[in-house]
Image (cartoon, rainbow, N blue to C red; front, side):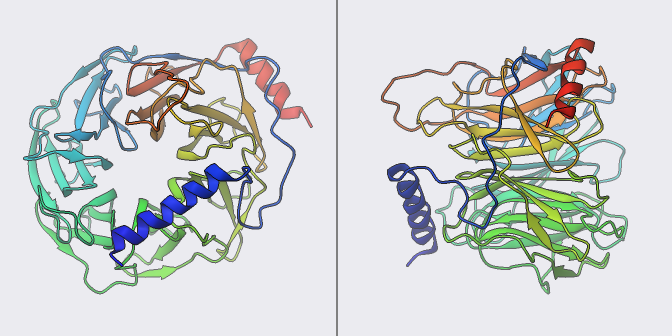
Length: 444
């Protein structure tokens, strides 16, 4: 059977099973806990800071934040589905945005995927690496003034603009990092079909990339997210991925060589359940842990053991019955413990039912769902990715969200509750709200 047919048959079966049976979260050995109790009153609130951001389109990516024009104010980059390449918006630090995408254009339509930012050609200005679902890998070099020029396009096994999708055409996600300690940034891309995980070694120009042929990274299979992070804190970048068969980790040795380190991570019967991935020490043991978005079971957290294996925690968000897609960790409430931002569906309805959710972490691996925060918990089109950054420079993390898409048939004929498809929600955290949050920390 063709790999595309097999993959989508597997996903379709999973969808039918979810839609036709009573919702039972977690197919693995996760320990159940009582439903999360929302706070009686809103412990923190958020306001939309999206003036100038697009109000149409399908923004299929994890949005990224960087200072693209050197004014020390955060800017945003995102990649659309059914667009013609990535887009950049310059922020004013007050919640207003101006598009600055000169030179960011494909020769054909973009399909969404992944965006990574770093100074690839070492000129002091941020550059963009794009892993496009259909068109493969693109690199755009920035001039520090909001202008761009393409230096690499359609790089990826069998990527061919405008071509018919065959095995391992395109890339679903991408990241940048120096994996072989030569001082040049390298790229890693995860295939949207059967191309596996591909590492490209860079030469510091932004146009010279050599595919690593001899590797222990998987050369077959597909996935949704991939990232570099020093997960074992040895000073060398490692690879973390949401593969089709489940979450996976490979440890790097600083020479471009990799060792699998996925003991304890799940391999569900249905493939393709895991999307967004985030890294952080959620239980205060000085070891980095993993959080993944499962589009059936919601957010899942895996604690790193002392031997590098992984242990799944009790159900993080048992009230979320519709599954999660995007996920990020950060100390939103400024209490010294990591909190969680999740995009997905609270219930199992279809239509404009996607939303944003904040879970307060207690620093010991426990989570509290914060309800009544003004965030749209429903009313949005298909959820994609999320990010955290201090957009308005007040010292508090704000929320960034990419959404938009064709929703499933909605018998109630609901409409989108919030128009912007690339959203920024500024965090409002007063002293009284901090006091409420402090009480939640002490609650049993």
